[in-house]
Image (tube, rainbow over all chains, first blue to last red; front, side, top):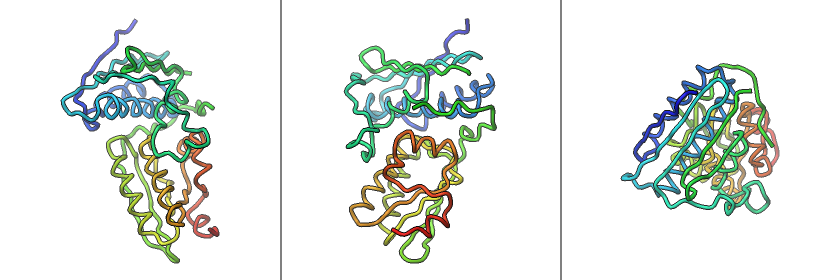
Length: 134
Length: 130
């Protein structure tokens, strides 16, 4: 069983591209299709943006931890921040009438739509995501 | 709704192509904005500001040509929605055209196709009545 790799980056969206690049490089090397790679990139960007903005409140003194394992069978990613967490069930569905024209609030819905498993752990400050290679 | 599982491909969407937004004024108060590359998390906020600026400058319609856009995340989509809201308030319209299949799927999944009219080409978007 391959071990998880982990990388901690400063709470900065440009710095957070590093784990994204490393993960996507492995995704391509493991033969995932274009659409799966698109899905993983999208979910990862949503998770990191949430960690940066909502978890760490854009505080440059905080950090984002990304743990990941890429195999031929599945991509597993965990993104954690230093925030207080949140309750994902309280986030409204952005595809429902009254919410479609809101500029924000689509990140969690997109993670759930594009990946096979999405779970929020800890106090809600860690998201675990899985995409299977089909 | 789940996205199309797809087939092996060129992985253009993860190539980290730099994002570019170019615009030109057309006839009758129309501005055509051409998005290309990847609208990723670190540029999305700037994209939002640029879209709002373009909506303010377009007297009637802002046409967003997405034919060369290979990736957009939720903040970038939010920028388009912010543009839609400003345009609606000012009696104007934002029209989207020629999104690549993955981007079209994203627009449909988020139901943003209920807010925006999506055309197959810039010419069709220009020809359409308000």
